[in-house]
Length: 244
Image 1 (cartoon, rainbow, N blue to C red):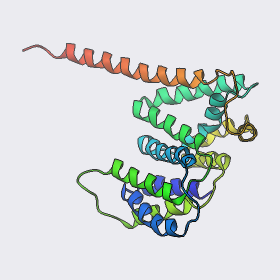
Image 2 (cartoon, helix red, strand yellow):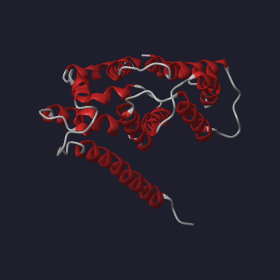
Image 3 (cartoon, one colour):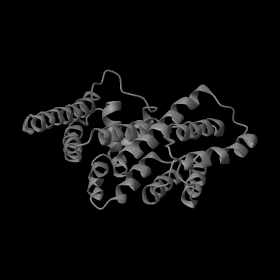
């Protein structure tokens, strides 16, 4: 559960990119005593963790993780869930349309896909390189000063790397970070078995299922709508400017 506490702390305290550099430094002594050797299987969870961070930085909200049951259900293609997929898909489409932002839409997708594929806990060395990469990727000029919040967030990131977290509880916990997002609890109440189905299916997709077309269609529609509206607004503004 520490990963949930870590993201909640980030949400309320807004640390800078320094937290990833602090986490990288703190992982060095753990790498020395860790007997687990890095493997190719570490690539997937490390990549998932990285896009979770990037998605959160884009949205700046945690309640997007509350849609995780829907994303797992659609991507994996669980059967006898069509009514749930349609209803929640409409709700998600309305939320993304109201937010009316491409970067929030992309962040939403990255957050949920990252949380979905983060199944195992990678080695400390892999986590060290992951946070080091994020620190280099998120570094901005001019450099901001290192604050105590960054230190606490970096240490929190290290602690979260020492424990395996529960995906179901993580998603539920993120619902309570915004006053309006608690209403999304119905996504969990109407699909209580989503994580059990995911686990029983060995975290793989159901064969010959095409439910993944629902999220693909929603995201493409929202992004295309934003692009078209932006183009129309630009043309309207250009026409309204009198020529000299």
